[in-house]
Image (cartoon, rainbow, N blue to C red; front, top):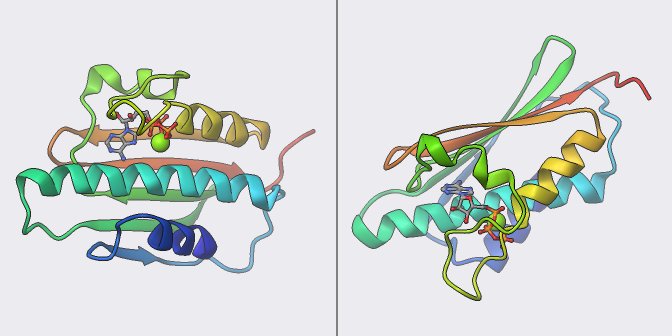
Length: 149
Ligand SMILES: Nc1ncnc2c1ncn2[C@@H]1O[C@H](COP(=O)(O)OP(=O)(O)OP(=O)(O)O)[C@@H](O)[C@H]1O
Ligand SMILES: [Mg+2]
């Protein structure tokens, strides 16, 4: 997660945005680290885009992106939240479909969340979205500590 945040901060116009991250230590989650990093990068880039979109209308707003980790039952939860422009309820399922994008032509291909969902599913995990237009978005990624293969 730390590396993913660094990659996004360097690669995107994210200088005025604040990123916060709390680490949960002492648990081992069976993952492919490059793949889970790609998931975090995809979701963080979407958050930066959403906050920049919000800043178009509210230039003085404080953009905040939060990565929270905690244990829930037998899963590690990674919750990535932003105070960007949000997603209306009727699009919550659509965003995980391939090639669904609301970004300008040449900016997004609509594959980020579809790929991310596939990766998380391959670790027997799940991704759920909570979002309200104008309020922000939160992605809750759950990763089982002891998946059965
Ligand atoms: N944090 C977010 N806030 C607001 N909208 C979001 C957020 N994350 C995703 N979306 C919406 O979901 C759509 C699909 O996201 P996804 O990452 O799959 O594709 P993309 O970002 O458009 O393109 P790509 O990731 O392939 O560059 C986005 O175009 C956007 O409309
Ligand atoms: Mg994306």
